[in-house]
Image (cartoon, rainbow, N blue to C red; front, side, top):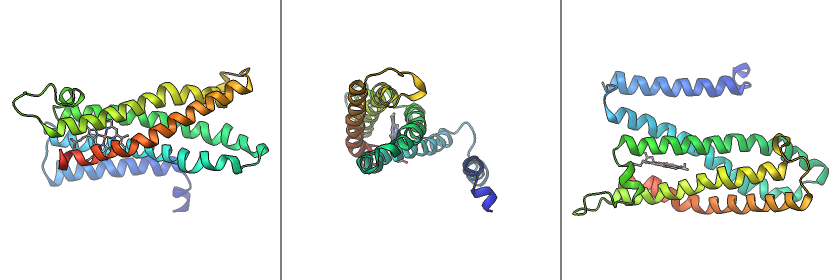
Length: 209
Ligand code: HEM
């Protein structure tokens, strides 16, 4: 068993395959859903959406609750282990998880026929009745879209400068690097802040909306 658990690729791909088989067995087999059932796609998309969201926000919390606060305790000569190895790898999963969370989230709303209604915070609904869920999930979606924007267009480009990822900025002055690192940190902290109300809407929309 240890040969299997020691290999991350085996574990990740097998876990994905087992999840998928479980889903297919339960929906198409035991419950008799068909591919034309919207509910089948809704459940599948929700699974992939939350899986991606865990990867994204898990890494956001790692940066904010573990890496950033502990950096000052690491001796200068050991800092490159984080800056050159750990942080670039974490940023890879972080930004692509943000992208897949967004894509699966938008597909989820589209699958439930309320993408436009949610993005317009209910304004596209029939004015004679307001659909609480559209407003509520819409607020959550916009908070998460702002967070996604921060990841791709503020945090990532600034981290590329601060850590000279892929050697894109080999000659950047130390103060410009420090400024970029500060900018990335402030937006990462903003996302940590936004993640909490965002999750109120994400997790509450079905029940409270
Ligand atoms: C990036 C933009 C995002 C969009 C467009 C989006 C969209 C959605 C939509 C449409 C739903 C379905 C709500 C429903 O009908 O019940 C949903 C649910 C959910 N989302 Fe997001 N979301 C985003 C980001 C996130 C993030 C970052 C997380 C963090 C983990 C997250 C976690 C969840 C959870 C836990 C649910 C509830 C699933 C359930 O109740 O079964 N979402 N999201």
